[in-house]
Image 1: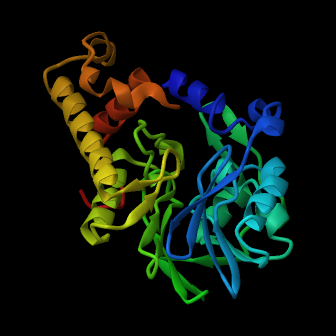
Image 2 (image 1 turned 30 degrees about the vertical axis):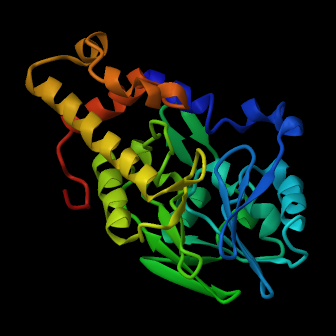
Length: 299
């Protein structure tokens, strides 16, 4: 597991590793559907609802990118940011909270506030408590809806998936869903098992969305290109099938190293081109498959 935490500490969550590159980052806006846009830059994809009432942004990447995010928003509308919604607590999605929170309330699941306020640990990587100005000032337990721009922006908590802080955001009238990091499009995901995450929980969460989302909906992943229901279904199939492959290997008496040397996930190697490489994903699956099923979600 040490390699897993090292990979995460040196890619997704070590802001200092990104700092030298922020000057080169370009934040770009793409129309998704209805009144919804997506901003890409460094870190998690940002969802944007725009209209006469102002802007709702979903996540805000890293703190140094806030001026570039504001500039990208200005290419869409001159209206102010009215609300900030966090899909989960990780710094590549909440780094701009302190900046945007000066003029707009930050809204998130109650566990986001708890983890940001207390600080977290992933292996040897320690994230200190966030400053008070970065904490959500409005929190919810199960669901919350913001009514703005003729749009119902609905946040739904998804327990024990990527983390225990996850929410999926539904733009109900525009027919768009922002999955946060419960969806890495075309990449193996990072599952933060030390902070409430679970592969089986992630599988459950994605299944819930697939059972509800319209076939023609646009889907914004936490990372990766704008997607649709077919792309989310491929991600779900990958999660189920890779976990099953590792479980089958364990049942046959294979060790973690044997699973890797046998290339048990060879047919899914293309998914290992992102943050999480194939052997690291095997680490995650092996730990999940070997542990007692004591999570709070249903299997």
